[in-house]
Length: 157
Length: 389
View 1 (cartoon, chains in turn purple, red):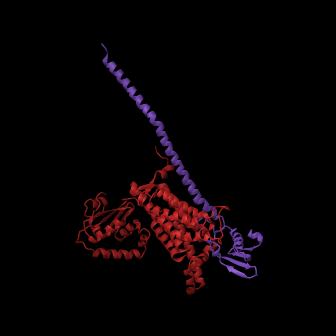
View 2 (cartoon, rainbow over the protein chains, first blue to last red):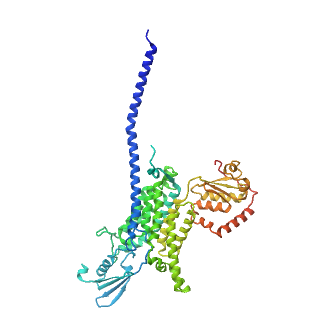
View 3 (cartoon, helix red, strand yellow):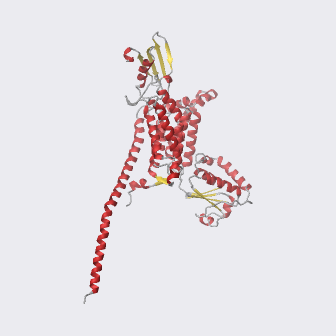
């Protein structure tokens, strides 16, 4: 007589092992996908962290560095930190007469944080746009920076 | 998977409503800056105007480019304010503002630079999820990622902090900057003499540095936040009223006020207000407070609700006498409760801390007691009071 009970148990254990292997194969299929998703989330977290650190480094580092330069400088939140003295421009005409020029005619907006070379650039520019001038004298307070630009042919070129 | 502590900020969320209101305010500030920028650009393209590019040989601004730049600025600003395709329009706006900062040394300004940074962070924070056309189309969200909000808050501290430190120089502390930049000081000179004006200017200069340093730090303290708000209002009102260029200073002030919003504890339904709902006059007040409570911070409960008093620990007699505000940090009653509620509303959060000032507080409490004594209790106005606590 066949031992049905033994066959049943054997069949049941065979079915269970088949079911386990199917489940584990499904898990095997999902695991790489899950790993990819986790990796993507981790990469995103690292990218955002890097952005935050970079942003704060720039936003704090640049103004800190600008504090080591003479006031006022830009990108350093140095609003109204120093006095904005007007630029004095004296034009010398070819007949020798002197006339005061207003900076607002030749600058779109005067700021106290222009790079130091702007005075010489302005002198050259004035010689170019005002051909009747023999020379231009520019005085920037309070540092007393003074530039006298001769409007020669070389200057106009 | 548990996030490490390092990434706790990345997982955190912040209320979206204050950020959206900040977006609208900043967009308004950006639009207000169009006229002065137009004037600068028009001057810059004149043949008699010196060009000062940051890098020699940089593409110059041309006369034909000016209306294009300003047109994009206007359109992007309006659409960003309305919250239409917020990330795109915000990106365009931030790009235009940054380009304006970098076109030429003459087009740079600190408030334009700040605007470009703030708009960039508002785009990253997805500030169009509420109070926007995008929210109408796609549905609104109550929270946004917290890390861009944190960077916006840090930007406030960075601006005030370095503004204070950069003023620690002999020229500013001597009062010379304020004497030259604040015209009323020159007027006062005729009245009180040179020495007095000098002392006044020195005192104001030191006070300015102290206030800016305080503002850099105190916004982060819940206990000191009302004081910081009042000081910020005082500082910026003073600069706009007393100094020039007025419009640009107003733009800067608006931008900073927008950042103030992000420091409010705007968790929805985080406070409970218990009020006497048998009073018609109280009902009018509550109706208006609810209308102005765009962030839905307090929930309003009538004292006739039998569940309210046991749940909140407030007695019916207390509620009949005065308004009650219960929050995690404690309880406020009467005029103090009204003031605290106003500190949570977007339209009054800036000036409501002034109601705590000595003198103002006493007058307010007296007026409140007089009002309570005179209010009518014979007309019940049905109002949809919240039941769940």
